[in-house]
Length: 309
Ligand code: FAD
Image (cartoon, rainbow, N blue to C red; front, top):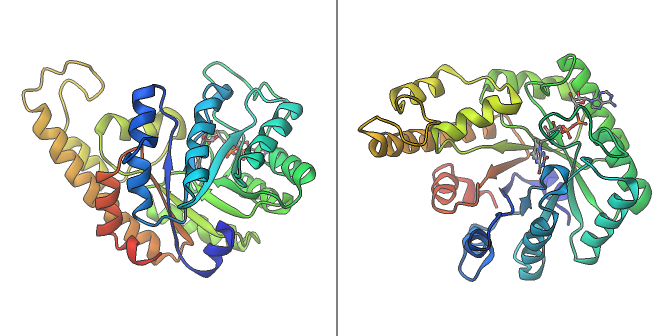
């Protein structure tokens, strides 16, 4: 059974990791007794691994995917983007994944590197990548695509964005992984709107654990323009690190205490939000694990996710 088929039957649980830049980070993630092996103990339906813009970390991505494939404890899903990739290059890389036993992918346009106006490759949108993968490889891949409940930052309207999502379904996508969205009212509106538009694909919700002030603000605002609800803003304000959470040497005397309090309140907020998503009847919870185990373990347990698999 592929991951999309599992989601047709029950709520799936999954994690997302990223390829570490250093050997030490790689050992911590993929080494014996490392984060990956601890994540397996939570019985995820899959673990996905990000793919860097411009193909900068392709080698490390494949190393992580190889680890998952060789361990055989869960399904591995590789993210894959159009950035800087020719059709020949895409064909070659996708064949390599298949040769390594990896037959699930998240087909993305990709984040445009700073200053770029387009993908710099032969394909320009995720729809084209899904179409190309289907033409070249038939049903060999189970293909996920991204969905943006608040509308992608570049879209001309939410309706247009949903119409492109419908095109991804028509091109052969199997399920949707969503961009982070803390605005539950907007998420419910979007879910109703995609169903009304004829999109029947399972929806796997991307959840970023709230653990660090700077990272939370960064994720919301550096690319995605996400709404931050009042409750989340209050958690940030109450634990604000002065002069701001981005400086290397803050003059605040309570940095460590504030970091810990933020992390605790953020995890509680994340657990509560997962409950609200489950009430919407979503098909999967996809936790951005950020290459951490303790926090993800706590959140998954408290949210009752370990009972769903
Ligand atoms: P698309 O679906 O192609 O959409 C991009 C924009 O173009 C949207 O505004 C859309 O409305 C518009 N559009 C779509 N099709 C057309 C068309 N035919 N004509 C005109 N306009 C169109 N990025 C990475 O680089 N690496 C990763 O590993 C990665 N992982 C991610 C994981 C998840 C779960 C998610 C949700 C996102 C991830 N991203 C990653 C980010 C993603 O690449 C960006 O959000 C990117 O800006 C858009 O990708 P997309 O696949 O949604 O693009």
